[in-house]
Length: 409
Image (cartoon, rainbow, N blue to C red; front, side, top):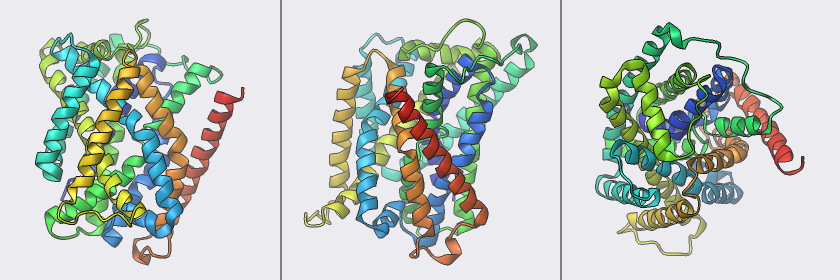
């Protein structure tokens, strides 16, 4: 039964964990642990609504947006088009950096990114959902075990445990901007909830039957809780091994990859370098793969809904998806060509855009699962509703403060 929840984890455990969580620990010690946990808590309902809706209706959240009205599907399409190139670019450039470091490649990051996107495109065309489903189960297990071992080893080294507090400044613009980017993708952009719902529908087709609400939510919770613990693990590794050393996480993808791998080997031992290198490559490759799969997968039905007069071929349903894959790859490479010298800028751009759009998507997800077309038995209970409104309020206020501070102060 497991599948969509672990694919969600594969999409989430990437830039937000390997890059942002590690940077948070390296730069601010243990200061942002509570923020990390709160971000996962307040966003929980909006991700949980995806498997809940699919289990109750058999349809994805895109169909739910359609039932809310044209405004919802248009809003989702605009938000997707605004963020997809920067998000795909961020995960791809990090992947390229890790590949360049591990294999000692001196090629241009854009060229390596192009090769990675080409390979992932072929994998998706050949394998479709099934290969994505199988890859995630193996990759997440390898990364989880590696991270747990590394954290335990670091905690066991008393020389690493020093004063890890007092470095985050709530009045510092750079610190606040990093916090915005950190929350934006912790544990992942809310867009991923829509992806998760589409993967859940694909899983139903693969199984030949619809899992129960309890089974679907269990699959989701395993993935979601797992990503939270892994994010905490990366933050602890950054804090225990890099914080206070005077070394900062590099903006260069290849250099950053070397720092990341060194964090693991410093606590586990040099013998683990090969294992960690494989885990890092497979983790970021999986994130690149899931993003490249997800955007065309959600843009296909939205295109069909928004342009009903165009007669799409029923014999070739994958044609629209293929066109969107090509557009996504070309747009990503063009963006990377402009900002190739700064992985950090690409990551911060993508995560900040995700943060700013989060309140809108959170509200839309809440509206879908509480709408009159949603079966009564599948609607969220009072606790989940209250948590949803707390999350929407927090995300909205924080976003408005950020916009005012960024553009008017």
